[in-house]
Image (cartoon, rainbow, N blue to C red; front, side, top):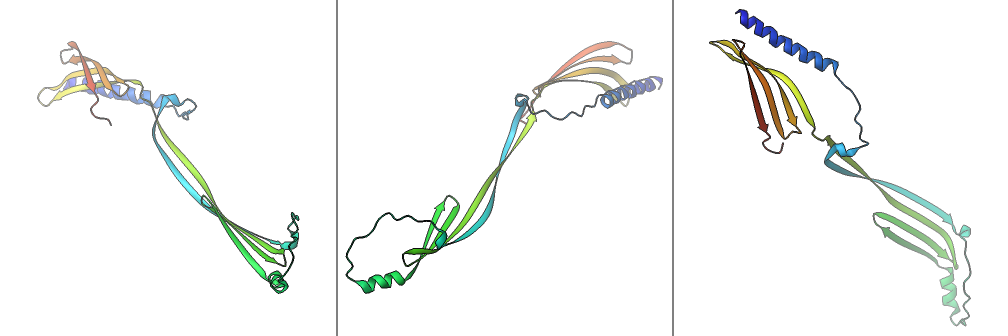
Length: 198
């Protein structure tokens, strides 16, 4: 029973030492992404956001500039038809589609001049958001700890403090010192390899 108390005291001391080490070595540093060679991209998510904008403009005909580019010298034979055509009011509408945008131009023409002009635009603004997720590349990590072999008949048989090397998440290499009840010392090593991709 005396040895059991000693072993328990050793185990509790080891756990207390680990707790002290972790408590006083906390680092809360922001992650520095200036060098992406230390990170590996896990996934990339693209999200597209569409926003419709409507614009309507109206202009009076007398404010639209014009230039005379030619004079027709054809002799007039059908005066009634020409005067009738001159007095009519025509409405022209032209629709232009460019990608997902729609432009509509409405012109009202009478007596050989533009009376009014309307412009409608349905503009679709497309914004693409890209989210990239990175994970820090695996590094070598060194761990230390303690292992104990305990049986109901004989109690604590072996106490083994040791260290464990994490080789970039590919393998675990361990080395420990085994101390038995009679204070005989032996050494042991272990190697573990990763199974599967995750």
